[in-house]
Structures are given as structure tokens and as C-alpha cells.
Image 1 (tube, helix red, strand yellow):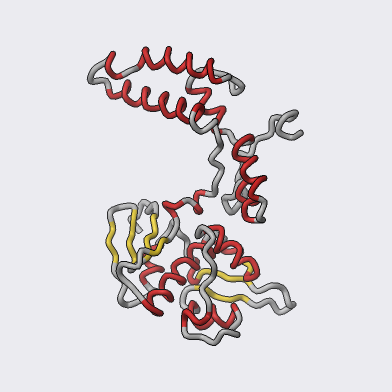
Image 2 (cartoon, rainbow, N blue to C red; image 1 turned 60 degrees about the horizontal axis):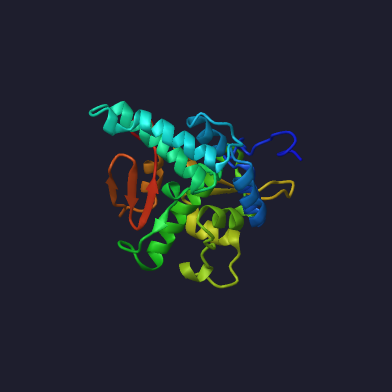
Length: 256
């Protein structure tokens, strides 16, 4: 009803950057997340607008509009015109989105995209120490998203899996700890140098905070560098390779 009668779209993010589709996915409602992206995204309207069409245009109308506009701006008709190339590329992308992808929305928290995910390539660091450093870097990625308000320990398993494509939290044995080791003990033993566990005197749920106000957009290299005296960085302007962990970042104006 909200979509069909009121025209409501899934085009607003919460403070953590999640769309409704993200929240549905995180709660295990895969079919609802799919429906939200298929039917409630703003992407279809945007692609139709590029072709000068209404959102409810059918495939025949979309094709006719694309062919007409393509003839007008095709680079072959205006050799050497960079603007023409860009215009045609935008038209083709919109046409492909509408006809091949069905105008499907792409509502996804940008922090959960592959370009912002830490991935393990196993090429540099191996064994227990490598697992420890990878876990710390991933933990910072999850906890840093919530800034000063902190992140509830009880949600770590679910959020970790959401951000890292279903990955489970490492077992205590990965760090040489006993199987019965609890999550708080694991965090204190393995990651006390990068996250602080805040216990509430009134018995409320413990919160995790990145040490020294870590923020992925502000000084991320400094904090990840503290993970090991043997850190190795290779930077190309937007990507930093830390041991066997890859973290894509957008650096701030100061270059940090």
C-alpha cells in the first residue's frame, strides 16, 4: 500500500547508512530485501529520466526513446566531442539498467559494498598472527561505523556477517584460546588495542568503541598501522593494502 498508493520509495538511509533493504537483509528477510530493491528503489525513475520518460514506461517506449536519443548524441555523429561520449555512455547505461536489469534498485549501505570490504587474499600473512590482524582490521570496520555512540556486543555476530558477506566471527581456537572462551574474553585478549569494551554499571548491554575515536574516513591508516609493528602499506591514492587485508578508502583533504 505504501508503495503502490503513496508512492513511497526505499530511498532514505538511517544514521548507520542502511536502507530498508539492508535492514530486511540483516534480519534474514531475503525475499523482502529483494522486493524492496526490485520495486521500491529510486534507480528506475532516475534511468527513465535520463531517457526523458515516465517511470511507468514500457519496454517498447524505452527502446524507442533510446534509439532516438542515441542517434542524436552518438559520438560518431560528433567526432572529437568529449561531451558526446559522456552523454552516450549515460544513455546506454540507463537503457541497459532498464532493459537488462529491470530497473532494479541498488539500495545497499555503501560501507557494505565490496570496495569498502576487507578481503583476505592469503598472499602475505599466514597463520595465527595473520588471522589476528585480519580480525582486528575487520572489527574496526564494523565498530567504527557507529562512532561515539558505540556498538552493542550482542549485535557483533550479525553485523560482522552482514558486512563481510556471511563470514562468521573467528573461533577462539583461531587465536590459540580455549573453545569455551566467551566473546568478551576473546575481544579483550585479541583486540584490546583497537576496541574498548564499555561495561554499564546498571547492567545494560556492553558496548564496543573504537579506541581513540577511530573513523574510517579520518586517519584510518594511522589506526590500522598500530595493529602491528610489521605493517606493510602499498598505497595508490584510494587503496591501502595492509598485510593480507585490503581496505578501500576515500582519504580526507589532509591526505590522512
